[in-house]
Image 1 (cartoon, rainbow, N blue to C red):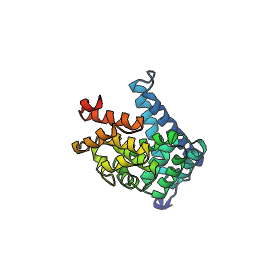
Image 2 (cartoon, one colour):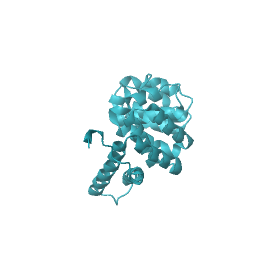
Image 3 (tube, rainbow, N blue to C red):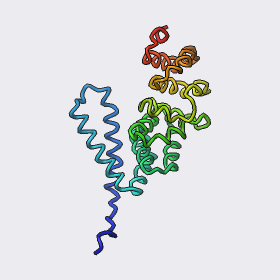
Image 4 (cartoon, rainbow, N blue to C red):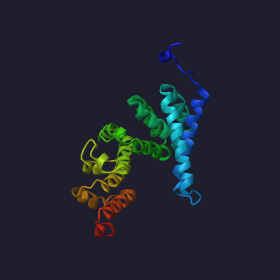
Length: 226
């Protein structure tokens, strides 16, 4: 038998288990920051298990996407959103990301955290997604995801935003304005400070709070505490 042409059989239940457990361990890690019961060793253990299940899905290739998407559509939880978004970016298939975004858009308060986490986890692989989704004409949920992911990744990701960060402060969507403030806090761009100071007068408390935090991060305590 020619080993170069041998195809390993697809074990569907095993792949589905990888998808379920990867989402489960993401949820455990996400909650760990708010619980005194999780020590460093336990976090490392969960992280290793999550990595193993994610690797199993990546090795499965196209066969890993379908069960992950089914789990997201069934459970509609942040952990499943994380897994699907990460697989979509790994594949480079933007239609898959659009599929994930469509589900997240239905319940952004519950699912956006997982999507943003995947974009931050993916590192440089999310640069193109950040550029596309941060376009002012993009869906507001996509813009928020891009801005929050950029805020988590730092200046190296902020430079991939589709337009100057200051333009996001005029968005009609309060969540976009708040996310823009968060990204501005890590942008290492002193020129953005006037936009943040102006955001302290925003009609929405969430925007004012993010602006104050960003200004404090940048060392403008006199404005942040005013």
